[in-house]
Image 1 (cartoon, one colour):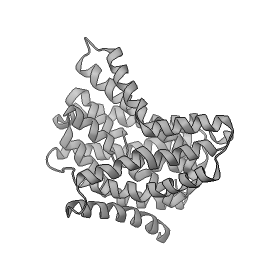
Image 2 (image 1 turned 180 degrees about the vertical axis):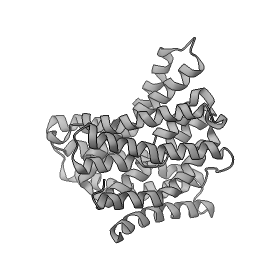
Image 3 (image 1 turned 45 degrees about the vertical axis):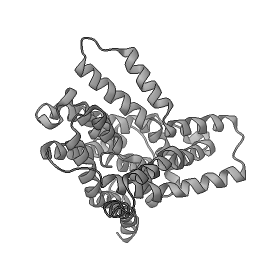
Image 4 (image 1 turned 45 degrees about the horizontal axis):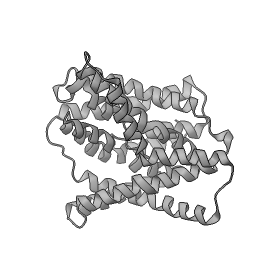
Length: 315
């Protein structure tokens, strides 16, 4: 338990620092956005580029991992869409924002630092394999979900594909993974100077990601839509990790450490991208922002319990 506390408390302590600094106006939201852009556009892409560029070919077998993780995510997505029919606060556009919130976990700013702090660099491969398609698949699914629900009679596949293509082509995490894959294919390896620079950026990704998350949480609201908020938290942080664990343990064959990474990522609270999707479309914003804020706070306890279960080999 001490090992878990030394993992979880520093992680959430860094989040608290960012939150307090934002509330005290030592760092404003503009500066916080700059830190977030550094994390998303440089630090994490650099870490993923280095991971993919230097991993052995035998490590890159994603199919079972993807089947378990995204299979569980699909079940959470469908559950949120069904539940949204009964809760007006998350019913807009067929529950598209609700499904996004129930599936899109905070992997970059919380899941990655937490996993690296507890398991070390050996989880870089499964981490990269999940992150490589996490955002593209969920943004695509959420956009299609919303457009089909709103325009079932005049849905434009070309327009939707154009918007998604531009979004994916400008996503630094995806570009970092793609560039790493191309460089890995060349077999050239990394020059020591370049490798050291990537190490420095990777080392910076964890603390800056956590502080950025704390700053962003200071701007989220818990007002209103409590029923929708609790429904999203329950689906995201309970149903999804249980579904992923069942699939990873009993439906496919995965190394034990990969199962732990998949389940830990599945248990992460709703991430900022779900809030951005809701805010962009002005749908279910209070419930989704509440799920981000309260879910992140609850994750301090749920992540500790989950890591203890993993260390005791109960998961």
